[in-house]
Image (cartoon, rainbow, N blue to C red):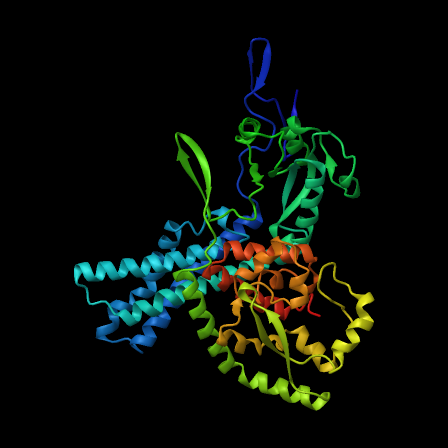
Length: 500
């Protein structure tokens, strides 16, 4: 019996015979091979970017500290050579180049930050222990600059990859294993969130053939759960995703891993704990048995104090920097439609406490009265009221909404402590009254000017998905995640899809 491989060749699996049964030692699948060209290009790009980050950090620090080359600064000029090498080494020790952290998610950026903190601490300890006359100004400029440059470059590479994936390139071929309804739901999500780079090419179901939800898709069903390896070979897949289902227990999953371990196939398990997994989950032995422990979300403590401090300092800096833009928006609103430039509205904040939110007025002054007349045209599938072509929006208001300029007065709310720079969307009281029990979890933190739902599609997202993203943020927030969301907000504003 032969099995066709990804490279188009045929081979006979090595087999052994025991008690009248034949067992395959080499399961069907790919031979070990080098990563695809796009992955090699991506990896080379981030390495080159990190080297450039080290050079930029050393150069900026040198000229900021010394201004020019002289006898006193010659040793620091060596930093232009040493800094890139040291920076690459520290990033490697921080596992910032591992493929599991690249391509999607925030862990990659967090590891760059960890590398910068570790390098700063190491330099401080070595300088103190050996009594070296190290320039603190040079160190405190070089390392943060290198980290910022690396993060910005990695973010740019990430956006390039996402752009390729929108075109159907740089994708992984995936076989899904699970029940039909769960498989269909994941296909919908992966097609909407193309940046994950997962193209579903086949599925294995307990029923061996599609009978319901999967009939709407062109995904081929390759048999039952015991034919996953054959499905991988037939579809030339490089990834298998196992969805949560009772038929696949620990023993079955272990056997599947054995079948795939000699091939170039990633095995991913979509746990039922996906929305609470992450740093909060740890495996600890209890009486010799590994148990999964779930820590509580970080809702109080020093990290929350740090977030509040960063919020207020950031809001003050942004208000100062954007003051000309704010003044220009005020003049445009007042000159093009009657009424005030600012719009005030009661929203619900942390712990269900009401507060007054500030925005630039983008609608005519009688918008609230006309809302009831347009309610039957609501395009939202949840408690929100959304219309792409809302006749209540002024001509200037359309542009303010398109680039989210109307949200900038909320910096005052952040400065006052009512809101955060990053957090769940601030809801209306009528929306909160319609919340189900789980949705109220959004109210345990301050609402934000931007958040996961804003950078993932804004008004184009289904209501259920927007709630899920807000709840995920509440469960997993970190300062590094806030930083990444703010970076993604800039690109979301420049590409104003879903802004209405």
